[in-house]
Length: 196
Image (cartoon, rainbow, N blue to C red; front, side):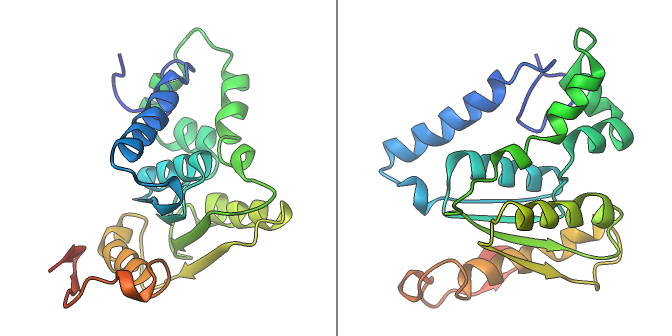
């Protein structure tokens, strides 16, 4: 049983949960006849990690992620200890778990990028230097060039991302970056994450 938080990934270093999430997404797509290359994963912060992780793992078409933690072991152990305790547990070697969690994103970055990453951060975000820039460096080092980056310095804090994420998602999806012109909602408008 997951007690406090696990990023949809693992409980006591058992990654069955991540496999089940992937199976759920695949099942929903299969029953609705949705090809995986028509799927978009979206999230911010912890949800941003999940969007990147599952998006890369499932080879979806687009990932839209705001301020995702890159080094999950560092993020959980150093700033969110309750997640660390739930994900790692007491029966695992903490050093081994730390390194394994830190590699979750980097180990999924493919050599030939088919998934487009759309990333949002701010130089004011407390994780910009320690997570966002290393993620960009890792993408570049592995030759993954199918991504775009928005650095919005109007975002003054990590939690302030919630005020900008809906506009980032809407502008990425509805204004040409993701959906082809014929897929735009006719007569729709985007307002705080709702299309109407």
